[in-house]
Length: 476
Image (tube, rainbow, N blue to C red; front, side):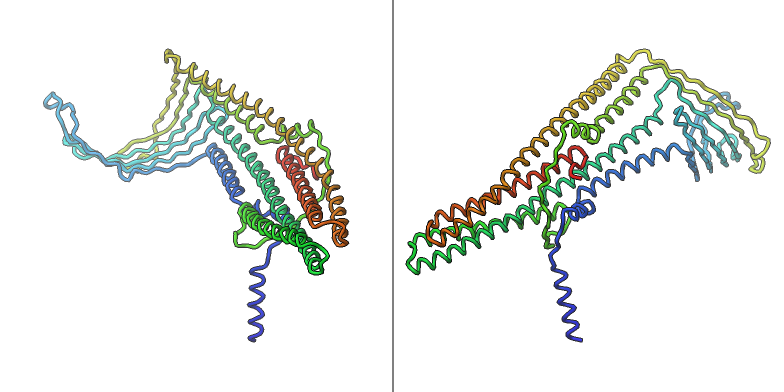
């Protein structure tokens, strides 16, 4: 039993501290679920969705119920006293218990509304002249309200909410693309730091082996002491470079974990097949994709629509407008509550109010000019955004072309440098070259590997940037 317990503890410890190996796809999936940026974008999108749902719900029938329990008043008021033929002050008051029920249906197409209103109350009035009097009242009425020659605010609110939701969806997609790009960028930086450690480790191992050979030759009297000292200096320098490379790798890991949303105390490693796959990109096609898909372009178009709505809304304020209201209802008042539900009286009314602006010191005109200026600014913003996108695409493709050329050249230089180093090492063993010559070849080999790796990573990042700028996956 004790052995089983110890085995379980060991298993838990190993699993608890095991290194987590991540691929690029796994890293992206983690970031799209756990990173701060995606959570913030999701909340912004949720807010816009709920706002649109709220406005749509506001266009449906609403029901409200109100109660006054009670509504009490008592005051000293002046009234005409027929006995004295003069105005006198009397204490007058009332206590009312009332309930009201509202059914309201907006009409988005006309910006009007229908309302069904029902109310009932019991009232007790008291004064010094009449004493106490109690009565009851019931009312049921259908009301219609319709603005004429006016801006349709209901439909505009719905359209604005729909545009803002589309904007939030595009911003969410942009945040997703930015996260994918940032993960790729940090991933390849981490991968480069890891490979750099491997390159420096290989360099240290090679220098260490050369130093041992030189030290043995020095002890045997075959080479001068300076040969061994030169390689010992190179070995010390290489070990220092290795320490710095490992520190850079540790920092790259922490930055990467913070980006994708992993705890800093979790040990990770990355694996990737970084192969060079040259891809031909057409500038015209890439630009077309960017202009069709970029959220900045689409949002600029949305800004134009919103400003057009604002221009219409402001323009209507300075025009003639009217308000039509109509009411039809039945009601009854009686001193007995059982008698207020039959033999109703009619309650009808129609009212057309016409509003004609006469003079406002040019306020309406200036507001319209301001709104139209904002509209022009939005249109200019769209044009400028398109030109900026075109510039970004050209720059990204130039980066790809430059990195591609570097990869093609430097990949061959690694083969040549490795072959030259192997030959130089063999010549050093035979004593035909010095340790300084071997160190130079070692330096060239390390530089060739580092430059080739940097060029390959730059190419991968340039392709990732083009995908982010165009929303089109040229690699797949």
